[in-house]
Image (cartoon, rainbow, N blue to C red):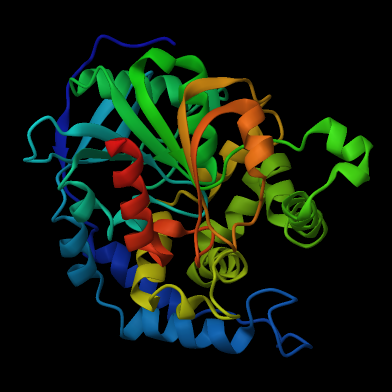
Length: 373
């Protein structure tokens, strides 16, 4: 990695300009709406009535300044790594001998998804939450090449810069890809990794002989088939033409919200409605980080760089999996053990893809127990 010699770490605070907020409200109020969907569910995407209600609240009920202040209670910084500025939260623990713990989000997430777990985790860990390149307040890579492996190398450089030669790591979604790549490429740095979406393909022998499949394998394969049949459209667009899809999302806050909200509804354990699992203000907090930084396009490029291009290799560091029942892409304990040094597998009673938002207490407990062991 072409590391620069600029090792500065600069304090950072979120401070969105008033004119950006004024423009956002103007755009929300002037949204040109499509016709209503011809169904009474989410099968065609985010419903018109819900999105209109959501955007009306976003424009006239949501208090960004209060939410901004709440996010700024965490110490934040930027530091240049490999040519771009990386934004990160750094919450130091007062516990003697605290283990550094690196938390990596995915898409359509951001560092806001860890807001409810940072404080309880810092009782045990020095918590570091970076924004992926092209996401939120991190810099936008000006050239291609920022795939999962390069991000993993950047994270290793970040932890070294913070004085953490050895650390634990956690991730879901793209964060699981990055965390797994850390385990492949920097095993000596890691005390262990913890995943909510382990990147482990099916055992080819199971696919060749369906009689080998147990109930867990059949459930995992069914989930993958459903994902490929009904969920994968967004990723095909973002992995092939991120620039094209980005224009509408960057220009229309309603469009950006609809693009993200549909995934919160489909991928969370929400009984049909995203706000059954995640509060409306928390949903908007996350959408805001895409909107105010105009990062719809730059975040989508991670799909172009890495989607279905990552070849999973062996991860020889102690690995724990927190398996939430509504996770979108499932694997089995046996399949995961083929790739990872799997030492812990927890079947969670509830929760989905956005574990830190949906079930923060379950996630925190599992992280503490794994790294304590």
